[in-house]
Length: 122
Image (cartoon, rainbow, N blue to C red; front, side, top):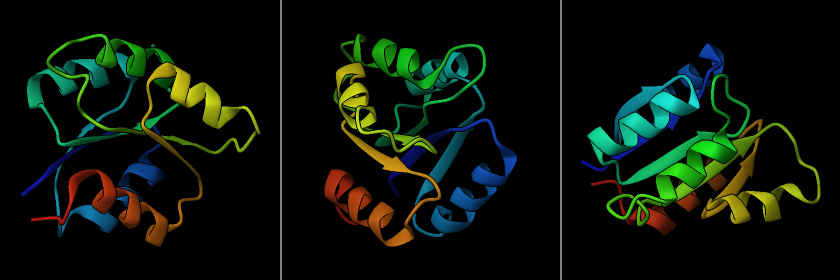
């Protein structure tokens, strides 16, 4: 089973993602950017869903740090944000995100991205 690291600080959003994904993927969670970087290193997920607005260390910096580690830079990171500003996609890509989705999440689009980056769930 493929593993996804969810880096998100809002319980409601974590619960929503877990409900959507728990049947098809192994899930691990982190609630801030620093623990997200640490979990990426220890868990070696197949993909990371990274909220960009996080306490302690934001998702922008956490993404840059993960992508700076040779053993982790291959892991696809999908940035998540409630902000849909025109420059956000470019900013996310510049930080190292492989893709970007706005909240509230479109479930169908999320699953399309997961299949694109990881193949089928099993």
